[in-house]
Structures are given as structure tokens and as C-alpha cells.
Length: 157
Image (cartoon, rainbow, N blue to C red):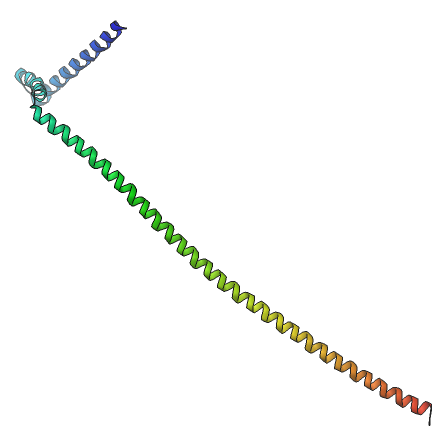
């Protein structure tokens, strides 16, 4: 196991050195730098490693502050989203309430129209019935008159 870890670590070192050499060769080809420029590149990295501890602390604090701000912004955005969702829900409820009120008003008007139509229909039926009754009475009256005439002529006094 230890041997495997050493092998992996050695491979990583070889890759890093290879990358550094590739970078150096690339710099030499592109910029036409001399050998001294190739040596200067690794020194820059070493200077970064030897940066003042206060710079590292500042960098660490900037990272922490950035993460804190992101966390605060996330919490704030969640709260604002909840408010927006609630406002949208209220708007939907108001719209549904208006639609319901409109539908109820239409239903009341239709019901009133149906009732008035039914009342007119019943009145028309009653009027026709009255006319028929009157005609029947007239017909019966005429038939009674005819019967009396027949009886008078058939049975004279």
C-alpha cells in the first residue's frame, strides 16, 4: 500500500516537472527567451509561496467574507422569493374570487330569467285554458240552446 502511494506521488511529481518543462520550452519558443528566463519562472512560484503571512490571512479573510456574503444573499433571495410567491398566490386568489363573483352574478341573472320565462309560460297556459273553457262554455251554451229549440219544436206545449 505504501509503495503504491509512493508510486502515485512520484507520478504526480513527474507530471508536474514535465508540465513545468513544457511551459518553459513553450516560453522559450514563443518569446525567444534565453535560459535565464526559463529559470526565472519557477522562482516566481516560489515567491508566491513565500508571500507574507498577512497576505495569506487577507486572502483567507476575503474568501470567508465572500462566502458569508453569498450565504447572506442566498438567505435573502429565499426570503424574497417566498414573498413573491405569496404575493402571486394572493393575486391568483383575488382573480379567482372575482371570477367566482362574476359567475355567481351570471347564475343569478340566468335563474331569474328562467323563473320569469316559466312564469310567462304558466300565464300563457292559464290564458289558453281560460279561452278554451270559455269556448267550451259557449259551445255548451249553444248546444243547450239548440237542445231547447229541438225540445220546443219536438214537444210543443
